[in-house]
Image 1 (cartoon, helix red, strand yellow):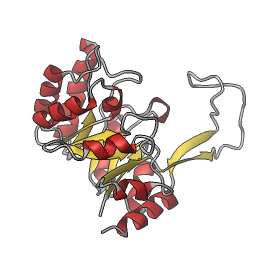
Image 2: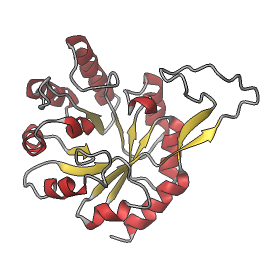
Image 3: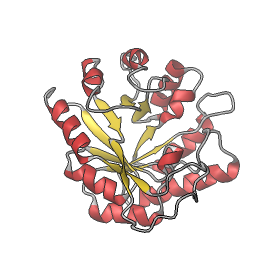
Length: 246
């Protein structure tokens, strides 16, 4: 049966994912940025309350995956703290200015990760040479690659995903970006054994008083009176569908 990883941006999301049948959780903050390193408090709460394997992301900022020295030092420190807290895995990745894997830095990341399973995240989807990159990640000992097949969604990138899983001696390919109950069968039918989904939905704020027209976001039109959460029904539906392929 294919494994279902759910991207969670809060403790509540992680608890919902766990209760609804997820197999593993990628723990992040900042959904509008595509996932950033979670806070120390969130990490501690996850260790206390979540029994599923939790793989926190280590990504110090949004945007590209080419970091200055200070940002990279912060990443290494975060990885070491996540390792020492007892998490089984971590999600991260770095590229050079030319869109290739930054091999010297990835060697340092692998050393800092120790026995944790390392997932190379969707930095892969903006690298220049995906097949070469996948082989390099295999040489490093990276456990898996989260990828949409270098397309806007994993469904659109299914051809490259299918090709990548056929390359011997390379990390597990985990399909992610736009994976939902409506298309999750597609990935299993193409031989993909791990899928990643946010299973997300937006729900209205519980606040009765709502002062409109003030944004806390870089997006001036952002609605501050709704929040992102994991849909229990979407997780349960995907798990049920995947169970049919056991």
